[in-house]
Picture 1 (tube, rainbow, N blue to C red):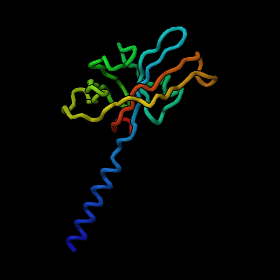
Picture 2 (picture 1 turned 60 degrees about the vertical axis):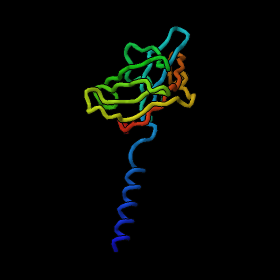
Picture 3 (picture 1 turned 120 degrees about the horizontal axis):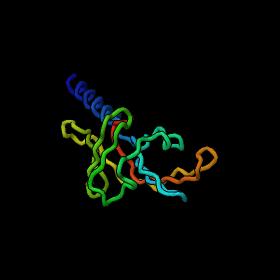
Picture 4 (picture 1 turned 45 degrees about the vertical axis):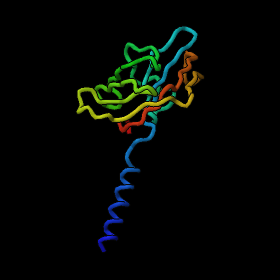
Length: 139
């Protein structure tokens, strides 16, 4: 009986770990067009579209997020007042500003995807999926 209960608890623990929202939660886009660059933005994965990019928070003071940046922050993403991003050598570690110091996720190199302007996306812009972030923030 105890072995059966132990197996059930182990199974529940595995299911809870698998169900933890750690899928691609949001993306960091860099962009440019013929009339000048766009500021980098963060786009929730469930809004990966032209309108999602247009309505996404701008990463203030950072025209492009690249491996040479040591720190940046994002305000008002999915209801979180401010997220802090620190370069980890292969991407960025994500923390809640003024939180308990626990890392809540990571951002790694993107898959090379893009959102390109067309009739649904005016101005002929193209924005590029530079980093994919695995957190629970927008889940």
